[in-house]
Image (cartoon, rainbow, N blue to C red; front, side, top):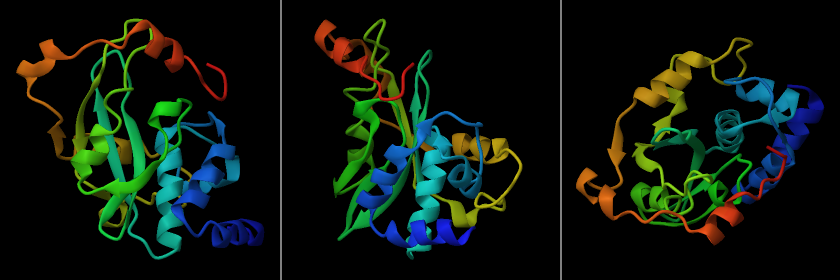
Length: 196
């Protein structure tokens, strides 16, 4: 890290400040890059943003935890960094969509937090709600992969996260009762920050 980057990290001392910083990063860049490569590039998608947020949280003494949210096809999974305050979970998130962003620490369980993403997690063209399962908190300190400073792409880490234990949000037999997002919700879902 450069002295300038170290100064930046010192200032990002709360999840809110980390989220505000992630919001300044442009959507894009290389896929599956380490936290420091993302910091240098100043571009990220959800995976890279979550790694960077987890790294900054760990810089300030927190555990670097990720949460993987799995979606049904044709939608994409989403990854966030977890944090905990006074026994309640919250999340830091890099995304282009309003509904998949930051979560305040008001969720007693990981399932509650994951469910907070359900209603607005849909495919805009069809309105199909796609969020299906969530992972256990994924501790990056327990991985043998250099997720902080590696110059290589972290495809292996993405695979390990994807294959880690996940829990369904609802039984399959309830799928037929899931209402599609309506026209107004889909219109709101088209709002993006960085273009499509």
